Each structure stands twice: as structure tokens, then as C-alpha cells.
Amino acid sequence: MKPLAEAQRRVLGAMAPLPIERVPLAAAAGLVLVEPADAPHDVPPFTNSAMDGFAVRAADLAAAPVDLVIVEDVPAGSVPALPVGPGQAARIMTGAPMPEGADTVVMVEATSSSGDRVHIGEPVPAGASVRAAGSDVASGERVFAVGTRLGPTHLGLLAAIGISAPMVRRRPRVAVLSTGSEVMPAETGRLAVGAIRDANRPLLMAMIAEAGAEAVDFGIVPDDAALLRSTLGEAAATCDAVLTSGGVSMGDYDLVKQVLAETGSIEFWRVAMQPAKPFAFGLLGETPLFGLPGNPVSVTVAFEQFVRPALLHRMGARLLFRPRIVGVLDEAVETDPAKIVFLRVIARYAAGEWRVGLSGGQSSHELTALAAANAFAVIPVGTGGLAAGEQVELEMFRWPEARTAEEVLGWTG
Image 1: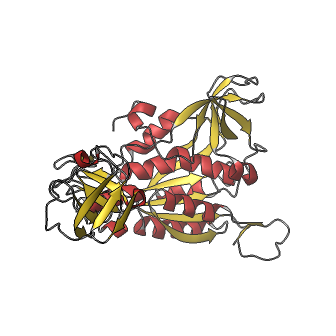
Image 2 (image 1 turned 45 degrees about the vertical axis):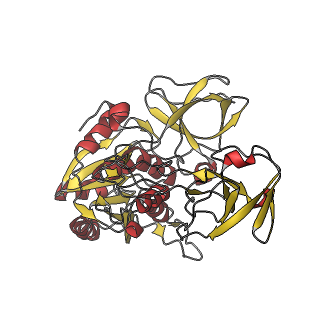
Image 3 (image 1 turned 60 degrees about the vertical axis):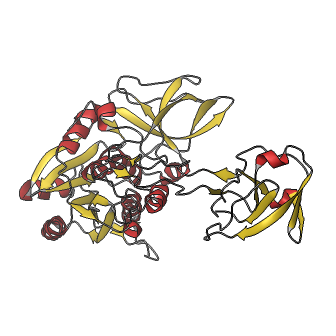
């Protein structure tokens, strides 16, 4: 069996970068910048009001209460026509440019007005409710570095600085297929004895989409070597990666390894981890194939440890691995010391520390415990049992990536 870190380095080393393209912001979510994003101008581009109210000179409010003369209205999208002089004010809307001479905005709720006069009852400090030009981003500032994976807030900021079509690596197409004559579609009504519904394809397709890739559904392939061979060939020819579930153990009907060995190459197929020890990785021509186990918990752990980092690496991301924190066990656990073990747990923050309890049964078919969990408790090789009250490392698989391959694996590619 391969150690996990060695297997992860082998997988990342086999991942060729995807082509570069320029895409509109609407199509860029989940993709990775390949050129830095620098601001061509200040954000905000001009000093403006943060409130609906009155633009005034703070010095005029020192002797409040005061009555000031309203010289004009400044709605958002307009340009002030008049300066604000001593004893004067301008009615101003949120986002409108500050008039010359004004340095403060008094919110409308703190005023009363009649005709061309506004009454202000209390002093307001200079700069109140004013957003200075460049207070968010200064002109020329580097907003995002190469390797940044774009989420919704990144897209909003790119739009604010006028980058409407960022340069990124192409979104990978990932083929997904389940194997096994016992596997039935999710919409199957009454199951025959010996049959199960396919949980793995919906699970994998959702995880692929969440990673920023495009899932391509190749359905369910029964235990037929010729059909599996042709399906894998089509998938490898049309997609950037192939994911199978099932068929990688030691049984006579576990055909994925057999077909991969005949038509491509197997890099490795067993990893010293639990769950997901029977995990095959190889190449069909130049297309990587990830042969995942058949149980859905094993599928998820293998995806998190191998597939997701590999897809992000191909897209050019700097951060590939989920963050890890330290928690304290609420209960004792026993694990296999020969493997790194990923327990499904619920981590909750209480009294200044993360407390950790098992989320349910730990067998690799028990999807209920995985659905309830928000973290993996990572038990290193050689550890075995841990007592209640001992510290444990938590991999927060619902949090975004925060660790590089160099930090995790000492791997720089």
C-alpha cells in the first residue's frame, strides 16, 4: 500500500495544466486567474456619501443646534453644481459625489428640514458617513494574485475595477460513471433483491460542480468488460478526467483495474488510508482516471484527498487542500494504526475550543453519518486509539481550500 502523501504527490505530478482562455464574468465562477488583477482606478472612484442626508462642513456643526441653508439636491449619478460654503448644506443621496467644501454627511434621520432650511441638533465629526475615493482599493493596487480561485465576491470586485473578462484556465470536463450490475438509477421504484440505487453519481457530480469543474454523466456500466472498455474509451477521448466508482477491489467482477491495465496504465491502486484503501489511479492515453471505491463514504474521502486537489491544480489554483484545525475529542476512538483514518465527525466551537464527536456509524457505506458531519477527524498512521479529551486534527471539508501542495506535501510541482 502506498502512503497517502506519496500517492497524492504522484497524482498531482501527473496533472497537466489546462489551456488558458478569457471568459466573461458570468462564466468565471470557480475558475482560477492566470494573470494578476490590478486596479486601473480608485474604488470608490470618487468621494461620496454613505448615507441619505445632508452634506455639510463639520465646522458649522460645532455650535449645534444650527440651521443651515440648503443650496441644492445631489442625487446619486449626478455631479454637484455648487460648493458648500459656511452656513450651507446640500441634500445628498447615498453614493452621490460629495460637493466641494463639504466634509461630513449628517444622516437624514438626525435632521429636520423645511423649505430651503435644515435643522441639525447635534455636532457630527468631520468625515462621518463619507466614503473617500480609493478607501476600498487604490489605483494600481494588486487586487488578486495569479492562482486565485474566483468566487462570487471576487467576481463582484473584478466588475468594480472594470475587469469584465478575466484570463483563466479552462473549466475541466470530468466524466462520471458507476459500475456494477447491481447498481440501479436513483429513480428506480421497487428494488429487486441484490440491487441498490446509485448514490455515487449524484454525489460525485455535485462535488465536481462545487470544485468548479463540469461533470459529464456516462451513466451506469454493468459488469461487462467490453462495454466498460468502450465507455472508458469514449470518456477519455471527450473529457479531461474520468471518475469511476466501484470495480477496484480484489473480486472477480471488479473490472476497472483489469480494463485500465489493458487499455492504459495503472500508477497505483491501494493506499494506506481508511476509508478508500482500494483506490486506483492511472492514465487512459493522456487522460487521468480515478478509480474510486464503491461505497459512498469511501468515494467522498477519495474525492477530497485526490480528485478535488488534482482538478484545482489543473485549473492553476494555489490552494488545493481543505484547512485543518485542532479539536478535542468528546469520546474515545479506536482506529487501525497501519493506516491514516478519516473519521466522520461533528465539530462545534464551545468555550474557546473545538469539541469533536462522531457523527454516526463509521462504516464506509453509512452515508447518514457523512451527511451529518462537517469535518474529518484525521488519525495519523501509527496512532490507533485516542482517549476522550485528547486532541485530534480536523479537516474541515465544508470550508474552502486554505493549504498549498507545498505546505501539505512538500511538493512544488
